[in-house]
Length: 338
Image (cartoon, rainbow, N blue to C red; front, side, top):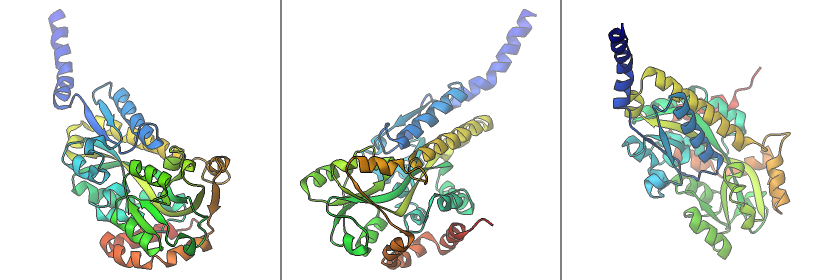
């Protein structure tokens, strides 16, 4: 009987040992921001959930501040596809240089609110984008968010396009952002955040654009700029993603665990970066005001004045993104619940 129980135990352990043999001791997750931002916290929450729920079979280490790509954020998709990283909690902006269809989210003044964005990412367009990315070697598990990008500056309130004219605005290093700022009459300046802070202090650069809760409040943007305009000019969805080969190496059971953890962690992160920005709770704007910032919230008509100037952006970039994808997104955005 004792011998039988020993054999049975070995047989039961064989599947576990086989799984352990093909799983890595540690998986690397890329995150371009620091661990204290909600984006970084979302990545850490995902890693924690996966480790606990797989009882340590899948151990993920989060590499923050773009450390896996020597600070060059636009290389993130390439290092994930090549297996330098196994996972990523990534911005569509940083991947849009490689995956042109993701520039959909960079089209200026396309998304009027969060509900419109959710209809796009959680519907046909979101699934289509997942398919496109999967064919390139990466599986998107869930959608998170860094938020709508709002503009701040040290010179004056921006209410009309004329107020933006001539201002030097720091932007991310993605081509469409350069095009947008030029179309609006600003002078775009591409530099990393460390350089930008020095440039703000020296008065060499006048302003920047970033999400309020995701970036601007954590970095205390009021140290550099007095004026902020909430204009929702582009949105910055995040993707919890995994290298295809890594994904395929997991058992079906573990894939389900990892996917569910991705959905939950991404939802938590998305909820946090929207906190205080959806009426009636506008406490995030109150925080900016308490620190001496002049807050301007554009009306739909005021936003439309800026959008008029961006027609050349649509003419150039919609064919690059894909007419069908753009039209499908537009249909979802304009959909009204009956």
